[in-house]
Length: 117
Length: 117
DNA sequence: CTTAGTGCACTATGCGCATAGTACACTAAG
DNA sequence: CTTAGTGTACTATGCGCATAGTGCACTAAG
Image (cartoon, rainbow over all chains, first blue to last red):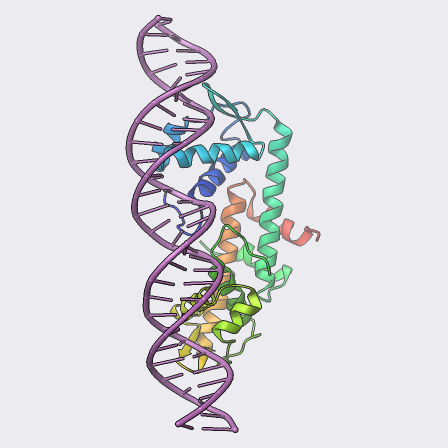
């Protein structure tokens, strides 16, 4: 994976794992890779990897057990709430951005259905 | 205005001016505020303000005349192209983000039309 | 007990952003 | 010419990100 140099790496990796969690790729209670292993797989520093898990725990998505590792939270409600929150945020950000360009909600919806890859 | 501490200020101010240009708030050939004035109005450092105009010129949106100021480009095609580019990018970013959450294009369009403020 | 894997804490370095401050060069207007 | 407004070029400081490296404490498995 290659990173956007304009945004902190820990935030970008955190986003990746967040997505894996809300989509079920990483199930509730599942053990996540160790800090050092995560660092290798993403090509980042162990300190940066540790930061990722610290922030995920702050967000209530992971639980850390010293000596054992970091695990996806077993709180399914929290996960469902996050999925809802992320989707709503994506919609609002999009509407705000496209609105500032002078595009209506209806036109935005049309662009989404018609946009080619 | 308050800034997102996770992203460079010059990028955020640049985005503001970009939007003003593509929406016609700042017309082609129009003189933009001086670097020091821009700094005061946004509450940022003159050096950061200068960076904004440097980047806008790199993007082909402004023309700088030493001793006179910075002006919106007279190239209307460039402006129209940017508007198209920004809208397309917003759509693609949105589709990518919402797609990673497991939401279809149709559901995304529906969410946009139904989302409340 | 020993070992491997883990989280955690610490020092140090380099880089870019953002700040503050100063100085210089150019242009238009008086 | 003088002045005000402008872009431009420096130096310097503080901060957070990201890196590198080391060590320690905890846990489970052998």
